[in-house]
Image 1 (cartoon, rainbow, N blue to C red):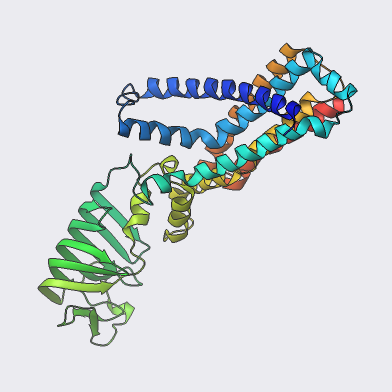
Image 2 (cartoon, rainbow, N blue to C red; image 1 turned 60 degrees about the vertical axis):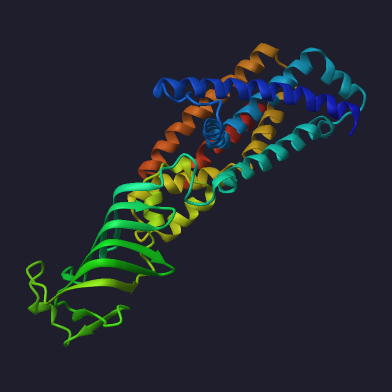
Length: 376
C-alpha cells in the first residue's frame, strides 16, 4: 500500500471513529434515559454481552451515517489544507483519491453484514443471551386448526407444562381437546404426558386415540356439516392417557415464541425462519419482523453507498469551506435519520412494504447528492 493511501485511510478512520463515538454516545444517553438500569453490570461478562448486542443492533444504520460524515469531513479538511489540490497537481486522478475511501467502504459493508448474524455465533438460534428461556402463559395459534396454551414453556428444551390444545375442523367446530400435565416436541411430533383426551363429532369424524398411544383413529362416518351445530357438540370420547403421540409438523413453538421477542433481538437467520414458518403470512404481527430483516439485508451495501455519496459531494469542482461541508454532512445525517425513522414507522404498520421503507431513505440520499452536483 502506498504511503499516500495509508495517510488518506488514517484521516478517514480518525473521523469515522469520532463520528461513530458521537452517535453511539447519543444513543447510549437515550437508552439510559429510557431505562435507568441499562448501564448496570456493564463490567461483568453478561453486561459486556448485553452492550455488545445493543451496539450490533444499531450497527446497520450508525455505520453508514458515520461513513458519510467521515468521508465528507476528512476530504473537506484535506481541501482546506490544499492537500487535495497538491495531489491533483501531482497527477492523482479522482479515482486515485477515492480508492482508499472505496476500500474502506467495502470493508465496512462486509463488517456490517457480518454483524447481522453475529448473535448466532454468540448464543445460537432462538437462544439469545438477553432473552428469557422460560415463558409464562404462552399461547400459539395454528391457523384456524388449533390453539395451544402453556402454563409454562421452556424454549431450550421445547417442553411445556399445563398444556391445553383445542383442535377444530374445517367448519370451526370442536374436533378434539387435550389437557396434559406436560408436552414436548420430538422432531415433527408432540408427545403429551398424563392428560385427558376429549373427542367431538365433527365433519371429519370422531377422533379416538389408538391403543398404542401413537396417533388417532377417525371413527364413524364423516358427519355432514349441516348436521353439526357449531360450538354445541358434546364430547363422545372422554378418556385419560399416560402418553399420547401426535404428528403435528406445523406446530413449531419456537416460531411463535420468537414473536414475543423484539425484532432487534433476532438475527437475520432467525427473522427469516420466523417469517417463512409463521402460519399466517399476511399477519400484521410480521410487519416489524419483515422490516427488520429488510434493514439487515439492506445494510450490506449501505456503507459503500454512503462513502460514494460523500465522495461525490466532497470532490466536486467548486470547493466549499470546512464549516459548510461539515455542517452539510451533519445536516444530511440528521435528515437521513428523520426520514429513516418515518419510513420505519410506515413499514412497521404495513403502510408501505419493508423494502420500500428501507430503500426510500437511500434513494433520497443518492438523489440529493446528484442534485447538489448538478447545481454546482
